[in-house]
Amino acid sequence: MDELTRVRELYGEPKPDPVLKARVGALLEAEARRRLRRPWTAAVAGLAAAVATAAVIALPGGSPGVPGATPTLEPAGRSILLAAAVTAESGTVQAGAYWRVRKLVRQRYPEMLGEGGSRYWMVDRRISEQWVSRNGNVWAGAVSLGAEPAGPADREAWLQEGSPAEWPGHQVFTAPGPSTLAVVRGGVAFSMAGRPMTFAQIRSLPVDPVALRAHVAEIVSADEGVVADALSGLLWSKPSPPDVRAAAYRALADLPNVTYLGTQTDESGRAGAAFSFTLREPSGLVRRTLIIDTGSSQVISSTTDAAGVKNDRVELVLEAGWTNERPSAPHPPG
Amino acid sequence: MTTVSWAGHRGGDAEVVRRSLAESERFSVIFDAYFAEIHRYVTQRLGPDSAEDVVAETFLTAFRKRARYDPSRASVRVWLYGIASNLIRRHHRTEVRTLRALGRHGPDPDFPGHEEEVSTQVSAQSLRPDIAAAVAELHQRDRDVLLLVALAELSHEEIAAALGIPYGTVGSRLNRARRKLRAALGDSNPMGGDHG
Image (cartoon, rainbow over all chains, first blue to last red; front, side, top):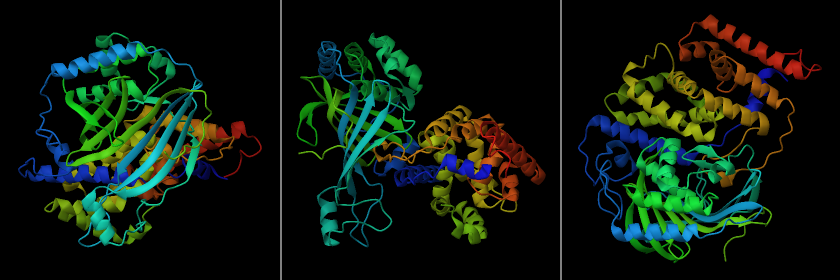
């Protein structure tokens, strides 16, 4: 075997990524429109609009926000976050061999499907589990629950087309898939804004909210939206000790850009206090909404709205904590 | 996954880029034709997480600089590889980290951001860490040429155009890179080190 063949084997064949293609395509479209200097209005729908202007963003379900402005959190929302901090602080350091996060993920397929006049959006639903052992090995479990039409109008169009179960050339299937568990080779156990983090690094995070915010801002080196996102990740997707979770809640209460939306229920009907912030993702500006169970201080859902697309990605946190169970392929819910 | 079917349409690509100056939406034809290939190459070199930004930047850069594209110098495909190569060069540390992971664990057929999509793959290539380390230790210039040959399968002429270097330089850089890889394989595997 010659060395060029070995090089090819080393690198392997990455999978195509239609989701990323759609995102980059939207960026490109936005750039094309920006160059045309067309007037922008909030009525311009789609991801592209928010990415390109960054001046006025109109996100679904909320009033237009102006990045750069620094609204402070209203007292009601602030006191909820501070109370959650107290609850979090009283938590105990959990024992267990594996950190496990189990969630239900609903992700809108990035392209409309269907033919002719009856185009519609489909939403992929899956249970996703991540297991991390104390020594940093990572397993990923997944089971697809099958895709379904995104909303009533989509369902109507889909039914009219004869309720297809799959679409040639698209990775969307209405049938449930097999349940799988895989070792994530070379996987990074945790990350903050794309930067890898270890158990030890999470455990040694500052417990003072001001110091934590400064530390996180330094790690992510990005604007306050990304800082808010990184801090909220410490609340549920990472095995943060109780005092770090408390500090993260307090830091969020002081961040500009965090908005309290009142009580909301997640897609499975669980109620909690909803907070949102906007942040810049590679795809452009998005709004993230977290629903927090005020009784337990646990984050129960994380929803991402792209401009013009509500509920682009919804993650319901089913479990997040330490366990002595061994990694295994996930069971469908219910 | 190389878009062989497009090989016959390179003149057409250049025409699309020219027309996209007046009608920018035409550039989407170029994007549709080459996204998969450029994404593949960048993902191989930088891993799925970092590839995202670089792939986006490659196409945005191409779009912004399309007025300066010279079809007499390079095909659109080769021009895109040139832009991607320039951008990849800024991510040296990520590339080295990716190579270390490839050496240890082998290629990871993961969707970026979809940690649940990972599939298990038996990986038992004892020489893999050596070849990964050797690729990581190459000079950036030599690695660019090596990987444009091995992964992108560009010809010497195309690589010269993509990187803006003389034709003869492509051959000398490639030879140097291959020599170092053979040496690395030979050092750890004296039985099989002297072929190729």
